[in-house]
Figure 1: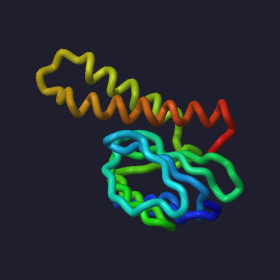
Figure 2: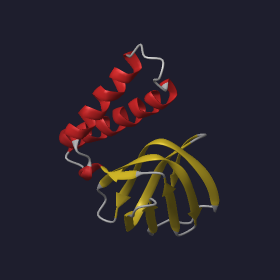
Figure 3: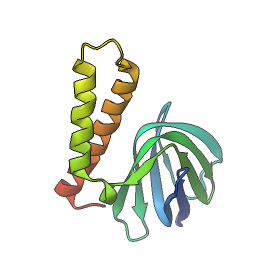
Figure 4: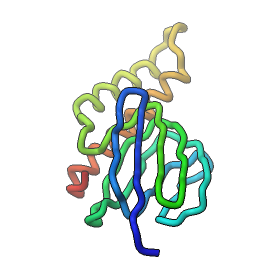
Length: 141
């Protein structure tokens, strides 16, 4: 089915994406899912990962998603995320520092370290770093 859909990715702080796209692929908590125009309406929880979309020109774009919810309608996908960042906006140096901090916390012998929180921080940093590095390799935004 030809046509485009409106994609909106929103965090508590800002609107990260609001544009017309051809396709959306999101990291659902029950598995990755794809959306084209005319999709059956549904709600899904999202896990930490990468939301990919193909813009109107056919270029693949990517957004880091730190969990949230997606509402899919036949002509619109709305993502409410705890945090989100376009691939082109990710600062690789900041990612590297966050990755190092998370690894140090996990290796720490201190009793006060919250290991679950440190694991989540490590997963966020790894996902963001991977996305930032893929920007260099493929030239996508």
